[in-house]
Length: 628
Image (cartoon, rainbow, N blue to C red; front, top):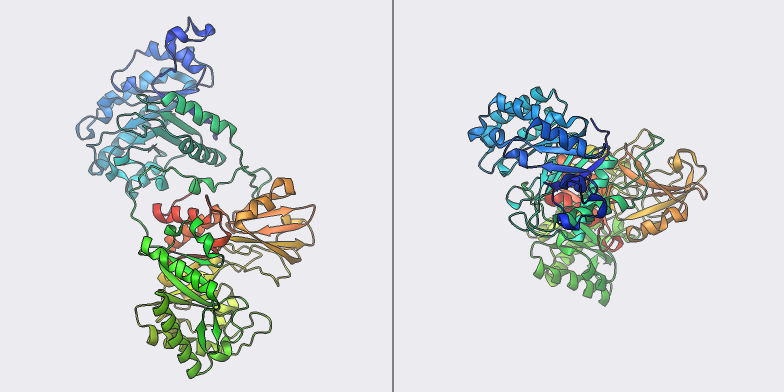
């Protein structure tokens, strides 16, 4: 078998860019295959599907190509296309014995099934899988391509995985492969053409995106086979272009702390630079995607608002006991946000009150019935005036210390419940009620009467970021998905505690950070993690990679335990902790796996305008929980 992380690419058949009369001088007397093998390192032999060649012919093919060339053979139609898949073992043996002559230049065996073959024949499929394994003595890589979407079910994926069979990734619209369920130990891509009947020309943008996927799979130590079957289109040029992108792509360095030599490329491209025309069989997931927005209203037009389910204006304030919009600019911004509902009718616009430093009088105002009721009444009035859809309370924090100098009291916990009740009486069921909750133990344990509040509130937006914050004296991940031996606070820790406290999973919205935090650390041990430290400054995701580039002295790392990225400049002793597209992808997958309500983030203004974190979240939401 070949080594892992190799890349083999070619055509479905020996297609050439020029006729024999235009072969280069050194190939004028050579065969089509020899000239082909001078340009590409693999071929998918389709002619064998129709008629078995002589064993001597296969042996001649073997001797005609370089040592690193690989042949993939399409399994005979007498096996894959026989009625109800009732193949004969002698046909399998004859096929395998013929292709065995290719010797050490074996690539894969491709079993392609007709559109008429449906999942009802899964038992016959298993018989074929076992027959191929027995005949080949498990010495061949085997890939299977389905042309009927009924096959894309868990029991089929489990079967293929059990026998280490790779599911071919193909792009015929009616039966395109669900990328989230790729099986087997290697990757097999078939490009059938962007137009019907194996025609068309793939765009450079599409091929760049595939090259990113391929490089990522290779960093995961998977061998990749790619074949272009749009031979009635521009297959040769498409293949040459893809090969150049795979060869020349430049990726950022990632190092995992558990190993000395690790992958050198960012895996985020798998989710944000993804195949644009594969149609997936999975149902759309009703995951809420909630973005806080605090910026200029003119910037809103630059973002993909259609990828949000909720957009939260940040922030309204208290004026006495009333909810208050501070100025004309804020009024115009809310109105612009609401105007997006004409284009995206399912979008909900929420008004938020408070924020870090913005809830100085909350403890006092919400301590009395009159204060709570006046606030609730003013909230309803603003909802009706602006035609918004709900209120989000960002009181940081009830019953425990929050912003320095802000009042808090043990009574806040009960008063918060009474505030939620007052809001529901005023707003009825028409409007949503949510609140931002600290994602750390002290808040979860001390600030909220969870069972009472969550019977009324629609959502809790868990601020599972700033878990290492501006006042922290020890560095760490500020928004990790999982806890580590040295850091308990994490998304998963918060979710686990909330569910234990009686919060319904479907009302929990976890948080992502569209910004990073920089810390000056005391030493270089652990690449800056869990060191005595002081907060240095923040950085938006849109400018993050300029700040933490190799030119600026940073190495970028991935903590496989925390599922979190970080960067470190050893010379300056600066640690940067942040979310990236891979980490928010993992968070969105976590939401879907745990059947949580959704994911929110602070804040939209910090995202990149293209290939950003919202794009990564949206991809997973649209295409299902993708595994690794």
